[in-house]
Image 1 (tube, rainbow, N blue to C red):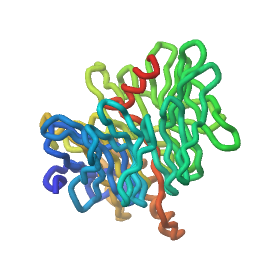
Image 2 (spheres, one colour):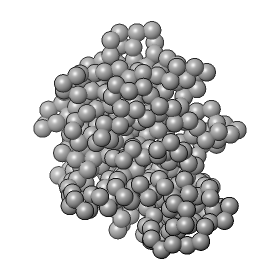
Image 3 (cartoon, rainbow, N blue to C red):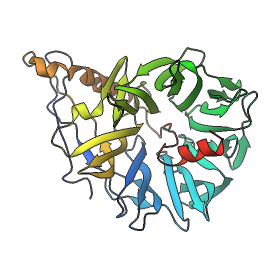
Image 4 (tube, rainbow, N blue to C red):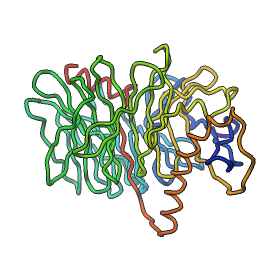
Length: 385
């Protein structure tokens, strides 16, 4: 399996005086023989979805569990991309046939063509969202368009939670774009901005927290977290001009990527409870990896995305950290910088322990967003951006 032998580790510190003996690992998800692969989502069963290039350069959607290499979902399409998968085995994405995009849902029964557009997310009960010029919801075999924002003529949905709350963005009068949150009770509701003209909602968790990015007064874009009716909270950057959030789990841990200080490189990040961390700071400096973009996080703390390994673009998976409670001596100053990320991971693990204590079982959906690598750019062009 592709994950064997490609790992990096570092000790993570959980509060002062408590150490984890288990390493954070980074693994290569695998691919189809081409020179690039992207992992875009991971569900609570640890199943990863994304896409990888073949030797001929065609992108093929994949679904991969923890015990095997990626399964090619492409079938007869020219190209395909998978954006989300639930624990029941349903995968949402897009296929391209003769240059035309088709919203596609894969399951154990094969694939279902939802018509023109792209399917971007699927929740625990199998509801699917996406866009075909308008944001849509596909449920119980029926596709329903959700409309557009006032003054606009284009919208797309990018995430939904298990209660059916949907987020996305659309254009508005005056040429800007605004993020929205949708429910059957309220319809489409605007989100604010960070002082600029635009905002883009990309993911929503089961607590109703929303992640995305928005333009600032200086024209850059910053990742945000918010809840319906609340102002957007700027997550910040890793020192560069812009940052972008793509995934959020049920305790509000957000993943995405940011430009670093010189704006020449993108680094994957993890944000939780006011702390923004470069994921490259918690892997070994000699691992061979540079983690460029993080796209998905599940409730177990597994994170997936795209990075470079020994110079090639690869799909990565970060496994969660386990902790022991044995007291140790106070960390030396160089280790203090790891405490912040340890607190993030400890919160993830507390969430996991709480769920197990309550015997909460069953599938959980994960919100996602169209990648800047593929359909995100295509939708920007289609929307006249």
